[in-house]
Image (cartoon, each protein chain N blue to C red):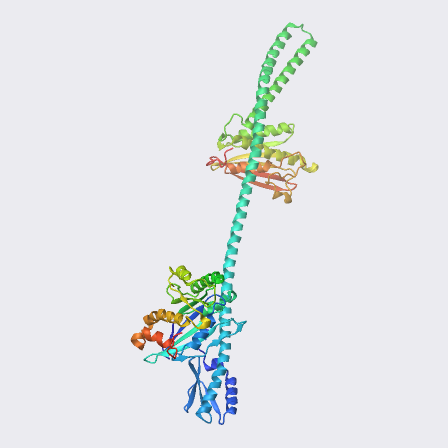
Length: 222
Length: 390
């Protein structure tokens, strides 16, 4: 849930990158860190890793300012994907405003995707969030690897869910990462606007919200 | 901090001493002392950011460039301190949540354990109840079989003896008449007169014997109640007298039984079971007299009845050996007996108590070892309804 402090006129939002182990959540965040050039961008914090696997979480703060001095912050988090870190995942997931589910496109990882998605549903319920109404984008990563499950098959499989269509990505190459993030911001805006009147009170339209937070600094779109 | 992710303040990241040391170190690097504070100072200062948040202000230094360099260095340091803080806070949050979850599960487990314990207690109670029902039924079965065989035996004996006793008696009376007639015919000598008188006496004595046999048969019939239905009007005094006669017969008419029977209303009851009860109590009393110390003097049994409000009271009292303290708790238990093997079933008092219960009456046993035993029965005149059909 958004955290608004009236004293500083500060609105902090939280987006969590969720998914099975080794699906590329941290890679997504690192790409966003290097690709994005929004008005405000903090340091990418990569907390303890072991063998390149996240133990706690990674965090990237970005932000923009509204017309009346609104200090809008977006903190992007990843969770550890390994099964045993469930309590950490739950702690990071609590009070989330949006979730990006990063799935692995390799055929061998389809079961793990399903298990991780089930775990997401379960943990959302435990921290009191409703998966049906929460802004949620599903990304199938690692499209660059040969032999991945074909996109048509994946899209067909998810067609009847509220999360269709899926976003295809290759985070390692920086492809689809921004598209995923944009999709999430597009879903997130109406929810925040309804509560905090971003357009009316702060002069931030849906388009401005997405554009200003995903500004890349040059014309090319990754 | 409320949540691990809340933005930290300068005080969260650095203690007072650490801040002083940082200021001192930075001042050593710069051409003029610099100061890092959480609040913006009056003098010219550069903001220090952490995660987009201004956490402090750096003032002093030789130039703006020097200040910028110092600020960059502080920001660099803060990144690592902040990382550690975030990880530690997250770990703390997750551990606490895990512990709370564990406690909740523990509570649930305790609840479930208590539920199962209660269930197991209930089951045990049910089993105990069933066992007691089975024992009760078993005992009633045993007793009713015994009663039935006694009844059948009595019926057979009564049938077989009544007829011969009938014709023996009438024959003896005819024979007595014949002796009188013969006495008139034989010559009148002292020898003959004595012979006829003796013959007459023999026949009279025999007639008396047949009457006694007939009485015993009658008592047996009353005792076994072969003529009667289950529950009927019972004359308690008559049942008692039959039982007394039977016990006397068993003990060769050697018992000193004092009867003090008052006028009683008929009661609603099961005559054969009541007879059996009276017999058992009298038999116990008789055995108690036999087992008493030889130097105690003549044993006596007192049988007393009394009419009370809608009830009759029966007291059977002896001055025999009494019941030892140690046995008193067990005397009503089925198959409990202090007598040698083969001389009793250990059901006497059990049957008595159950019979009295079936009649919704009460049985009190009062005994002192060496002094005697008194059993007091109270039977209602109208048993509301027999609790068991037998």
